[in-house]
Length: 443
Ligand SMILES: Nc1ncnc2c1ncn2[C@@H]1O[C@H](COP(=O)(O)OP(=O)(O)OP(=O)(O)O)[C@@H](O)[C@H]1O
Image (tube, rainbow, N blue to C red; front, side, top):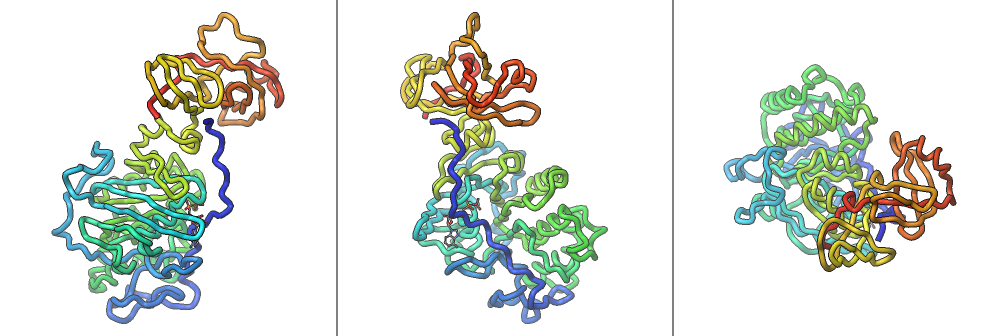
């Protein structure tokens, strides 16, 4: 086992582009009256209870075409106590209390099955991570009610919701491209949800103004989305989702549409807002940094199953699949430990400092590897393997060497060292790693 890149999945189904509110229908210039006035954007069927905030993306096949940020059907009095997501220390919901989110999502498709369990305490931020086609978006859509469950359940604060239509779920969604009504101001975009939930025009606008204030967007309240920067639009979308008072906030690649610089700022702001959010948030991301910074708990999905979950630091320290090892930048191997020696399933043995027996993983970072052109002598490193350079690439201010041979591994070295060693594809090298630089843990 080696952290070679996961094979790309050709069947990927990125979250579908949402219906553009611009085409076809005309949401009112003011937040609509809940009873009759609103026209959801584009071809969404009007929900039974009147207007809805902008809806979720259409499914490419047989799935529901409505959904998104619905009304809050769970009374405030019934809520679990609030918790600060990044202040609390519980990586898992307390076993004695009903989890705020308790979901078993099973979706069978012809070539794909999603079967995952998600639980979270109030205030938890979960990040769903996984390779393309793993089922992250499907899981998010299932939580929103946009993709029906084949079987399983979804309970929020103890209330079963799996038969509740998307527009009636207390779920707020922030889509990757935000889905703001282009012809409504930022204020009216945010006021839309409360208005749909029955607030008067004045109330919904006051609430929207308060949200914009919290998001530091008061100066942009009367701006139309086209006049907002990417970061501002993202915050308006977040405000719009939060203004419906959701018990579950879903964020689909919330930072993906932003450039690197904006992303940095918006990530920090989003972290702050998620920390204040008292209910459960679930975000889907491809970016391990977003996941590590924003989430209390990572849920890694591969092939429709949860392969590992835990706190970011636990996952980073103890990856259990090649995909995760690669995500967190570690060389990872599986083998059988006998004292300080781990006999790898495929390849040589590795000496470690841990004293273990049985099936284990061994991991070490590429920076722990030292390369030599000649057989190493006089080194205290217990592990040395003969390898060949398969490829070289720039990795930050380092060079990353991809090695094959006795033990396939990634090694980082400085540009100067790479030049001194005359590294090039096909070059023979010796790789050494000190036992103290490895980390072994039960498989
Ligand atoms: N509406 C659909 N109808 C049929 N198959 C679908 C549909 N949506 C997704 N799939 C398939 O379900 C599987 C999971 O897709 P999904 O989009 O949930 O993965 P993902 O982890 O979000 O991937 P990515 O990171 O590429 O967005 C894939 O095999 C995909 O081809």
